[in-house]
Amino acid sequence: MNYTGYTFTITPLQPATEILIAELGELGFESFEETETGLEAYIQTKDWNEDILDNVFALQSEEFTISYTYKEIEQVNWNAEWEKNFEPIHVDNKVSVIAPFHERTGMEYEIIIEPKMSFGTGHHETTHLMIKHLLELDLTNKSVLDMGTGTGILAIFAEMKGAKPIDAIDIDEWCFINTEENIEKNNCTHITAYQGDASMLVAQKYDVIIANINRNILLNDMDLYNQCLNKGGQLLLSGFYTQDIPFLEERTKDLGLTIQKTYNRNNWVGLQLDK
Image 1 (cartoon, helix red, strand yellow):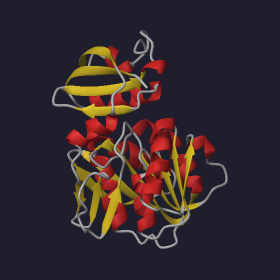
Image 2: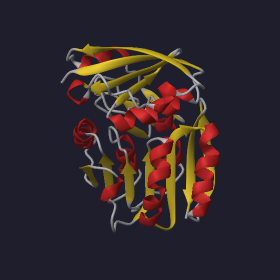
Image 3: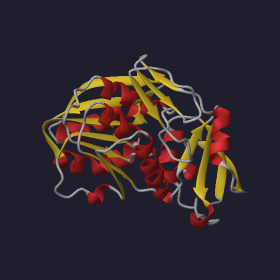
Image 4: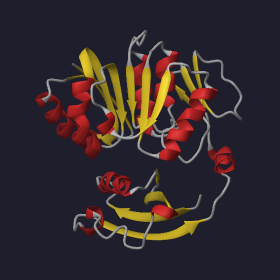
């Protein structure tokens, strides 16, 4: 499939970049890479049109200066591209995230991820933060929801820690396919992948809910997460910045959730909330 790629130059970088990522995600952009000067963003060309950015608030705001260029990117072998750049990820010397072409590390938890154009290979700070939170939880026989699963990495790690059953949901078809592939690569048997969004959550109940998405979606779907979370359960949230904590904190108080633990990494945040 072909992609249309945008290169954004942004001043100041934050919070403009975060706002722009959230807005582009709602328009169907499915892959982002933050740079020293701004953002690279990609959307499938079949979902693109010349007017797609006309109503993007961040581009119209007087608080930010954002310029951009775009071009269609011909289909490439994304695996080959990732092989050039994908480095193993290590979390607390206990968890490694590697691609199939990497040498094994022998760490306690070793997750094999086929690196493709889906979010969540672990390079992103928020995935790293969520792994740190999961490391400290006893997941034995706990039911888990991984919302916005990306590559399925967090669902896979949850199973490695003894969780079952596990639902992994992502709205993007590419992520759904990649998650199913990675479930198989890691010999997981307790994960079920679904393509969809939070509207799928009707009567399900979970002991642990993982939502690594972005601030706007988290705020919008928080009530649904809370309804699906068993009493005494944990809600793990990431995909936002340090300055966003007050917005999340206000919403969680309204729902009777308590922030128990906070991790930070390069201004990104991962929260553990208890019910």
